[in-house]
Length: 414
Length: 109
Image (cartoon, rainbow over all chains, first blue to last red; front, side):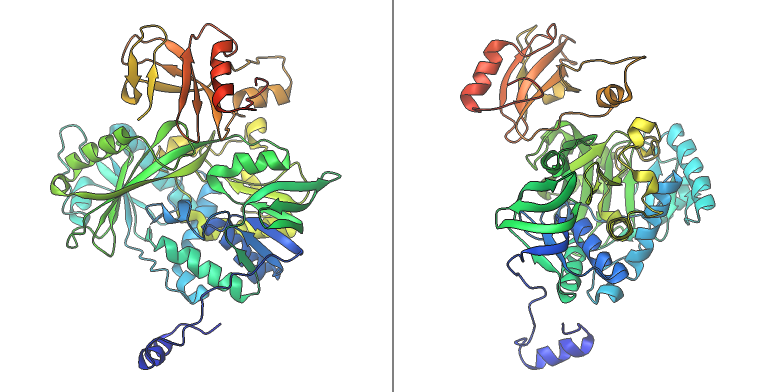
């Protein structure tokens, strides 16, 4: 792999950009791999990357039914933060956030990580108390956050209206080291690094069955034929239930649509990420100048990758009160992704009833921020059978009553 | 936008008039049941790609709960029916069979 650098750019500029290599190979599948990862989104590719980098397992294939990063990795609002209430969540999300800080250097690929800061607005008395509690919990966990007053919010976000009659801003939970990154680049950077380690990223290859012998996985059937493997990682977000059924077990997951939209590009007006969980809306400004807006999930099971229009209306209506200037903006695009919701709104990183099969799912509405940490933890789990980051996220925690209850802490915009 | 006909008041209600209530025809388990049954009842939900049965409430209308049969891949609605039943009625099943031959959902097909 030729490294990307300022010298490479200069060299290629001098020869009209004729010398760039393909960033990753598109091989046909081999007969057998040590490990197969289903799903070449951020989480799947990160899992493969850390399997190779941290654990020396490089005979790996990543199978993708569509195209690389074409699911939720390419559909989210790219927010990165780690201000969670519960210890296990804070551990894995903070690991993830810290890995984002050096990701561009690690992957030699510019993921445009921008630690611009994230504010979660407190717009009710309950939220004020909730976020004060989270700020105290974060202090214990070593996650740098603080609760700030409405004047400080106004200083950080001049376009905000803190005196809204219905949704006044009473303060906010501020994480200065949170921010955004370029979502496609995260998938592409990991794919390039995986390909460079000799791993096979195989697109347009849908898994149609999971082959088992004596309670152990031996391979998968795909649209490109049968492929053998010793270990299998299922990392497919909204389609996890389907794959779990092929492998012969059930998971406590429901798939629903989550939507986002962007406005026409405007001049820079907001240099932090603002989340308003009371009204299910969050907003940041992309480098292109578009206001990137995310909303709440639909209430019913859905695999169509498009959501209900009235949710957009509700989100925008509420945000217009908090940010009066956006009332004049035209919205350019709207899209949906299928997210996998668990009962306690926390992910599942776990062994399964089938030996050699591991699942990484249930990230629900907040998976992008977790990509590197999730991959790091999942790789350790797959390589060693155990990881301190995943112990609490077992698929059996529901029957044991050991929830990691972030639905209270994080609301819907999670 | 999803439009369901309320089987009680006959209104063709669109989504904003309705509230989704999750999986239909749950068999309830209480104290004394096995861990498996209790876990399945509390947390394991059908999450099919295709035919799905759900409870809905006509919340901004007559206020009554009812059932709906729907496809999660296309959002096509096969029909709605009374809440006073523990299984989908035959005419709804026949309608689904005509459009999705070979369908199954839990132990119904």
